[in-house]
Length: 299
Image 1 (cartoon, rainbow, N blue to C red):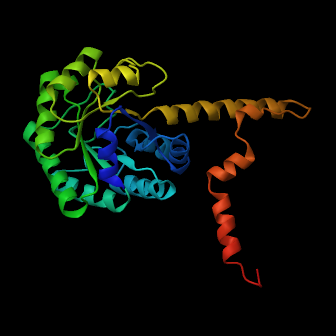
Image 2 (image 1 turned 45 degrees about the horizontal axis):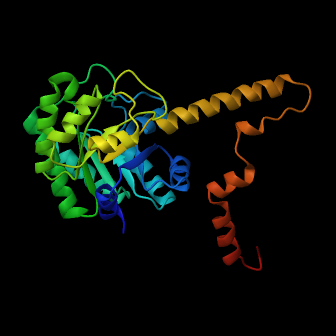
Image 3 (image 1 turned 180 degrees about the horizontal axis):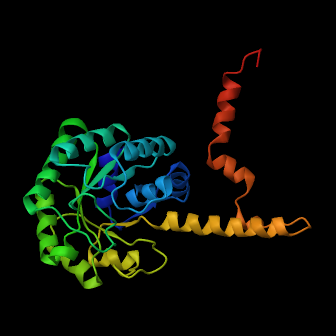
């Protein structure tokens, strides 16, 4: 079972679906190795890691499709893909869903911000009109049903900040009526807001817990168990791995500076993973097996 069916089963099963963010093949492999059932390809993570740019609309469909294809090829777990606004109007959304399905996405998320979009937890967001937002989800649903029935559709609204919580709830219910499998209101400001959305939206609900292991000034950090009690079905942690990788790289470079400045042999084994572990992670044993299978006398 793959894609939409597998993810839908995960969402419907008892217990909240916990989905860490990924941004490349290694991060996705680590999520899979740790035993998580799926990963979320974060647009912010791709923009930050691939472009060294903030999440303010620099990514294009080819960027995201290429990254999705490489990640989907690297792991067996399904990958949710952040498709921002769909990179245009409703017709563009239709094409985006088809392209990302072809690239191996198990789920595609479309949001209702104006372009250029920005990270949902940045100031200055604006959203497109209600009817236009719903039309985009209808286009995404149509593309899914005609071209990629195994793809799960997640619909996101950023309306809370500019237009208020009631508008966000109205949009989420309209997105569900338009065919979205899962809905998501980003940057909710309190646990009470999350409780209200869960109570008033008639669809599986996803929320964003950012780093997951430290708080931030927008949505409060809430344990997954309490989110489940509130009525949340899916929780994503899109910022965790990029922030953790940055912390790890900074530490390793600081250790390298120490090693360079120290005349004696200097080791900091805790700053890096073991060589055998790393080569296993990147699939070297599988390549070795292929080389052995297809070796010739001339090799």
